[in-house]
Image (cartoon, rainbow, N blue to C red; front, side, top):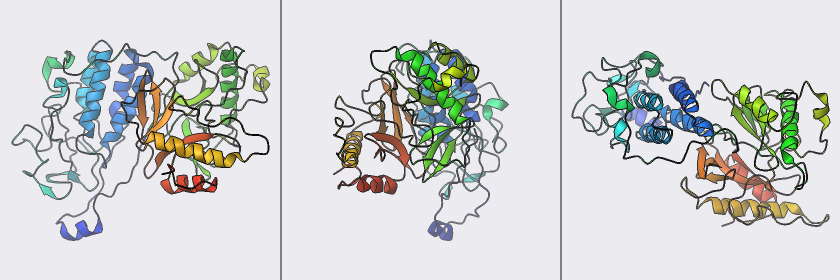
Length: 463
């Protein structure tokens, strides 16, 4: 996955006063920094916890990230490793990741975190710098010796730009430490346990919970297409196959409805301002519709092709990922409310987004009632509820919400956050063609405009 995020760190006024010559931006393929860790996590039994943590971690290498975000992410990686029987490979790869250089917007060094990590297994570790970055000038025009220009706990660093995993000095621009060395530079302690960081519950398997999304791309749970009294597992498998067959006909230029979610090629796609915005899945995974296992419906997620096929087969559906070898399944449910065929792919709130015991939408109105106003009120109510949520809030598996500006899905009793892309926020939106709401990444202005268009006042949260 190649993330090319252009970040201008200096304003025009700073450029006039700072004695810096703005040179090239030094970047990297940030997803490569945690790809091996993610594979080790999957091998250790981390299941659906691995990819969200991997995405959260590698995005901290972007130039816009704070000086301690990379270390904080590494603490979370260690905690997950410890919950998986103190997996030594995950711990070793985390210790290398925390030393990976960060992108720099203008060929200057990136400041060091000035606090101790939570985990003693990361103690004394700090990022290297890229060779193309000035060793004596840091972001903001700081010179060596100023706050943040020397690693935490040290009075000086020699050679400049080095780290324990690469003590000889900076590494080549755009390269990955994990490709240069297998030694984090702290000896045998990389295989130890960490009493300071709490362990979580037993590792989550890939079966029995709904999949999570990649950074900036929340999964869409479709409305149920069978009655509550029927065995929904088979129908979920058939619905997933039908969606995957439909996705084959989509391209990046396909017409779409605002908020619609789908798969285009191997990438997750969300419709923003009438066009699909693509978010590539991590290396080795593809975007696909998957059958839910605990309730009626489907979800859209990044997963390995083998796991997609296995989960569909487990429902009793035959014909593989898209049912192509069993044509009968293509028309198994012509009335299925899958919402992914370029007509209206907003996820119905009855199957997706709710954070309290009260329903996301009100009871169905009479045929002559105007549901648009109620949809706007329901979206405002959700957005007001989202304001009090944190990453530590209690949740129910499969629940979807917004935490801060990030999309959040509940996995094993905890929210997993997926940041929206630059300039967008996570919010509840009123559907326009039927009752309900959806949760999506959108601009704040568009969210407010869509809620106002429903006929309600009070802005995004009705406050």
